Amino acid sequence: MLVVRAVEDQPSRGIRRGDVFRIYLVDAHHHMGREGSHRNTPPGAYSYYALLWFELRRMAKDQLEKDSLLFEPIRVEPPSLPWKCFSLRDSWERMNNGWLVDRTIVFPYSDDYAKSSDRTTASFRLSNDKIAGWTTHAPNSTRLIGFARVDPTDGKTKSPDAAVNELNRAVNNLGLRGLKLHPLAQLFVDDIQDDITKRVVVRAGELRIPVIFDTRNIRTARKIKALVDDIRSDDSYADALRGMRIILGHSAMSPGDSLLHEIIRDPLIHAETSGLHGQDIPVLFKTAQERVGTTRGSWSEKILFGTDYSFLSMQAAEVILYLLSKSFSGTLADIQRILGGNALSLVQKPFTTDGPSGEAPRQVVFNDEDHRGLETLESLILNLVRNRQWDVASFDFMIPPRGTWPDVRPHPTGGFSGVYDNSYIITLVANKGAREVHIWVRQQSGKTSTCAIVGSRAQHTLDTTELAFQRVDPFLLSTLAEHSVQIESADRIQSVLLRLLEVP
Ligand SMILES: [Zn+2]
Image 1 (cartoon, helix red, strand yellow):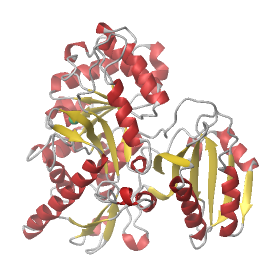
Image 2 (cartoon, rainbow, N blue to C red):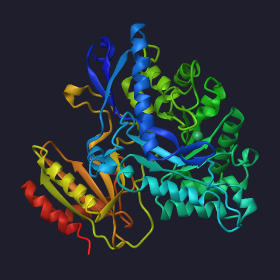
Image 3 (tube, helix red, strand yellow):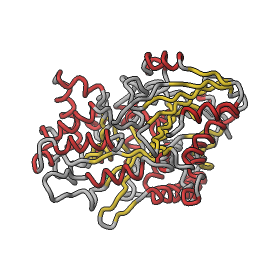
Image 4 (cartoon, rainbow, N blue to C red):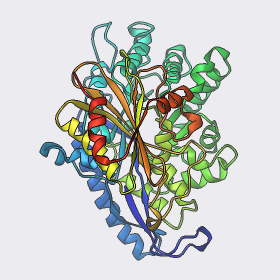
């Protein structure tokens, strides 16, 4: 998390000079794998963020001298549980750095593993396996979110279903949580409105995962918008539309084009910042504020921060600093949405894979007045991971439902950024057998917390990280209430939970 301090009083926003705020950062565009001279793996990502923080500080110092900053970046803070997870082993501890960025959306390059010569194997199959290998095991699963990549032209060169089947496999078997498409690299710019692309995008909608397209010009963005309109006009795609969310990577490299902003007024379409630098950056945000406005939610819900590492590196610092500068006229809530909230909202479905589900939902309610309960619970879970009984496939903080992101509160009142640091979902996968469960931790009030264990593959399960009761399956909530154990002392949490998480 990025910690910033107000440089001056901002009476209209109730901010005083010296107030300190925390901002949770998500990088929505990051590559791993190998493409020519480009190579990147999880430690490479974290080292890059450490350098980015160094560069951010250096640039901030210059700008402070020119009196152009409204908020000064003062330090980074890791979120507690991921940090503890990285501390479990010496080899993991070496990667316990670069906490400027809390979460990273990771997908393949057009990489050396993407191509397959035989007609039956889909492109990117091996690349997707590698992304899942990096993003769905502890400790990296607490920081990384894996997206798949497919080549829609497989629909022409291999079989009509090749790309769709690979997407199904990547999401349902590997547990990847989004899709990256690159019309230029996979040579389908002219086929974006064609059936081969439509099938893939429709399937992504049915699977409830977001799609990020690489877009280098407004022509490509216009075609994507036409594709979305085409899908929208056909009633048979109603279900796919409910889960459809599109991100225009690089904002079509057209930050000031009124057409870009017209396109992102579409409730399903968003823009991402990587590739923009210099004057592009203020132009993107100012034009969005003017053109996207507040007609359908806030304009700042439509833009996501991304780095495009390792193709790009330090430009990302320019975006962060612009948002902290006096030239940016949005609020801290706008900054938090752009730097992380929007990405979390788009990838809100927790990790899950296909498999048998025999799991009955249960919950324990415990006294947590002095946070001892929560600490006991966390150290128990981490212990199961250290002992290799369970692996962590993902770790997601709960977030406010879309359109309700609150104001960011200063440190003395908890430093709340909108990301709930005391309510989260951990997906645990048993190293023996086939169990896959969501551990759903919620602070109920200052005094009690609950920990629910829910089969991630069950019919009634947690399908969103949005913390709102109307968003949770009512049958699941009532079953949890019926199978609830009240625990008074922190010590008993150990034995009760150990029994529930026993692996034969
Ligand atoms: Zn990229």
